[in-house]
Image (cartoon, rainbow, N blue to C red; front, side, top):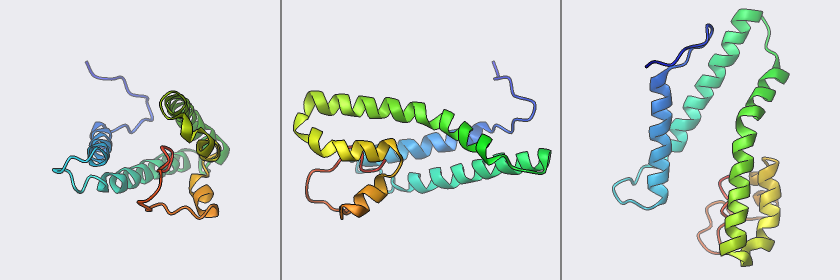
Length: 143
């Protein structure tokens, strides 16, 4: 059975499939499957595709209304992204609390930075290299 579409929707199943493959490539890359050495390229594919889709949403709104309501746009992004972010943060912190409690002190700052979407700035301010292979990595490093 096919999904019903909204009247003004331009949903494309193929693009969702491509995003899914990009995500799968990144996951397989991170669990060190030797046959997926270029899996990190899925991040680039995902970002390019997301940029296209967001531009399409904004272009459609401009076409309909001759203006873009940025408040509405950012609220819709927040409604879509924040619940998943909160769930992921809670699960990660629960896992750390149960299985790696020694990391809790370090995770306090990382968690707050992730909560406010400023992780990269947090690591820059604390002079922590994104690509440093020494030391204990943060589970929230790529947030």
